Length: 338
Image (tube, rainbow, N blue to C red; front, side):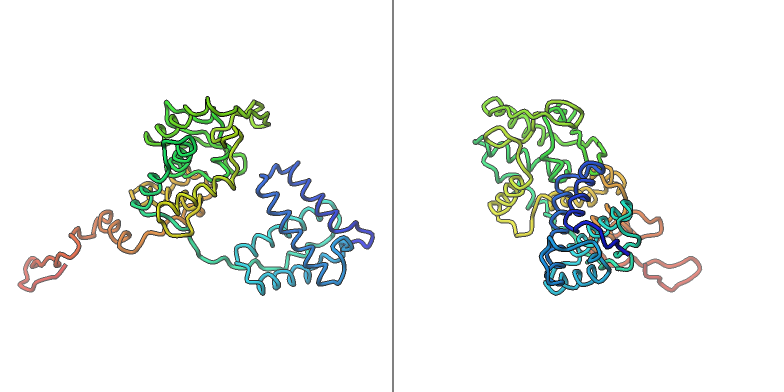
């Protein structure tokens, strides 16, 4: 039960967001998402209680405030994934309040999370990917940069946030490997191919004609030189790179729904279809759990049957469409179809 003299809910939300930024070192993207989700909840709760958001105090945070909010999201047609994310923001807020001894019981504890749909991100076929990589006009500075972005996405499976955060000294062109700071501050090394190395060299040759927008960053306590720059020399934002990718998807005549994340999915899918080990793909993608990587295993039934026939010692190897072999077992005149 919440204390009657508790401070306003909005003030506590600000304290929680500051805690996430300073103590948990969450990414700017995560912090922005939590701020949006909690502000949306405050606005809905104020409307439900007939007050202004600034008038809400901690006793208003009860299980009914959570259930009602989730019901409103459902009525608005929100996806299960976005609803689950907003519930996660409320659960994190509740844990913070428990730790700060502002409440004695967790109002979200009795709320079940909506079961997520079993959806998979879009991915490109090999021919579609070839058209996309050929789409930038590499006779221009912007086109050479964009070609390097698309090549590195497909060659490495980086997240959008990881790609835009890359600095010049994160890339080893001679060794064809890139150092990536992933989720949770986990660093990994990801290889890339010759085509990507050529595209990166072509882009880096243009850097001399761009302003050098250095920035002082906390990451490894060094001055940072962004790898992917806008024409003013500044670091490209996630929104800019998303727009760049979608622009070339349209130019290549590829269907909608293809985003930077779809290129990451394409990377994993094509590796898997070529026979790469799932745990190796997990390492390349920077997944903490193998179950996350398994979302990418959406091979069709024919592919699975081919793998089975090739791998199982008792499976018959036969060409598609060839009639089953007929043999006669020892000591019998009756044919046996295999």
